[in-house]
Length: 266
Image (cartoon, rainbow, N blue to C red; front, top):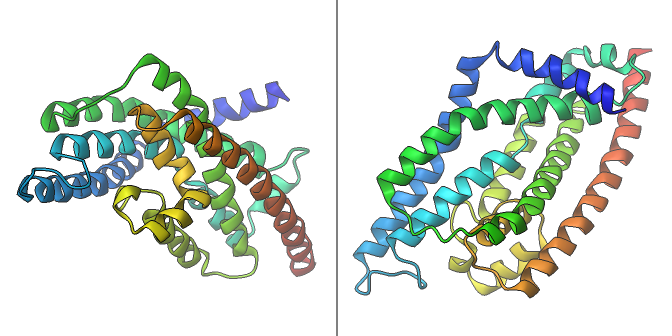
């Protein structure tokens, strides 16, 4: 099985290098929104009488959003852009002929190759932004080690959510609209639009049990050393629970989708 993934990696890595302009456009898209949020909240903090909002000053907001930017790039899945068109035009049938799962192999590795190449371009951009905004970074080696599994599990959750949503393309041609709805909800409850501590308490409670903050806010706060050991352990348990639940949901929908695909194809 490892050799299969190695072969898919070689193919997808070479393929990603053919679409460098596309990578740059995606990177620009990823960078713009956190920078806008960072600028807005920094301006609000600087305009406050104490220079702080909910205990965060301008440099704290810069640290949060620049860290979130890196976490977002590492955990967000773009599988819908690779998979939806194959489902809708029927070309996924070519991959169904292979003796491996088309999504858990080719689509998954394609997502990883896209992410790895973007990281190569992103690192110098992130360093330049760090120099420009002078964030109050509080990283330590222990926070890196604690955050790494959270980032990996966060990506797995994001991949399962995105691919499960994309499977709706077997029933509707409006799958991108459904994805945008999920994306909008994720923006609010993941800590991207606003740090979760800025939300009303009842919304913070909802956000903490949803999977979105587990792939965004959770790794970000670990890196910044802003979480207690108890909260870290709880969130890791929630990540594992969500991954199991999402994988079961994915398998159920995939099985029904194949039945529908075969029926329509027949």
